[in-house]
Image (cartoon, rainbow, N blue to C red):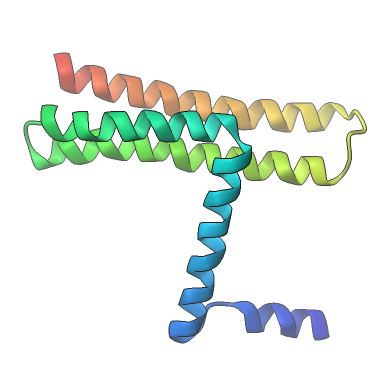
Length: 126
């Protein structure tokens, strides 16, 4: 019961709780940037393409859509990284479901990449 009480007390409540949650989120971003090559590469891609989106988007909606699909890639990559960290937490013992879980996470990033490519192509040439 005490462990449950401790978890409840860590939930963001009020300005201090929101600040704590922000710090945890920033720590997660820092971890991903430092240790995840894929996240770092996708972040660089976003840094290059967000300004391009602001230039080529003809309306606010187009600009928002072009940027949103780039940010979606980052979101999915962060979730994939979190999934991989959880799998690694339980050791390096080979288990078929661990491989499947990692493959599915990777597939999610791939689908987000395809979505971004389709949106960008449609905005550019549609």
